[in-house]
Amino acid sequence: MIDSSTGGTVDVLSGGSGGGAIAATLPGPDGKYVYVVNQAASGGAGPVIVMAATALFGTGLSPTVTTFTVTSTSLANAPVITSAVLSPS
Picture 1 (cartoon, helix red, strand yellow):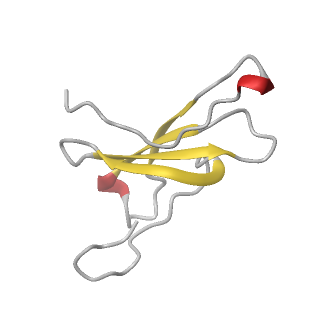
Picture 2: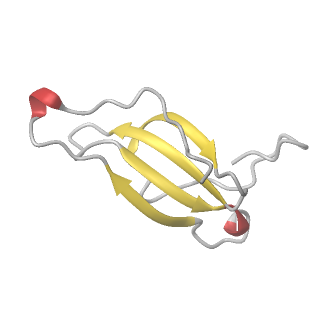
């Protein structure tokens, strides 16, 4: 995560990040969370959405609150996330 006022790195999401390329990063409507959508890593189960608490950035604690894996029942129909939208409600 980057501080937009200074351009400096505040924190790095690790563990549970999915290991694939980042498809989208979305701030929550209240600013309490950031959602990072990753494509599946090579051999991974599927794309992963990481929910991170912004209050924990830069504290040394893991900001990851939870992860959601987008699953598929068939390799032929493996999901590929190219964009994401977050409902404000």
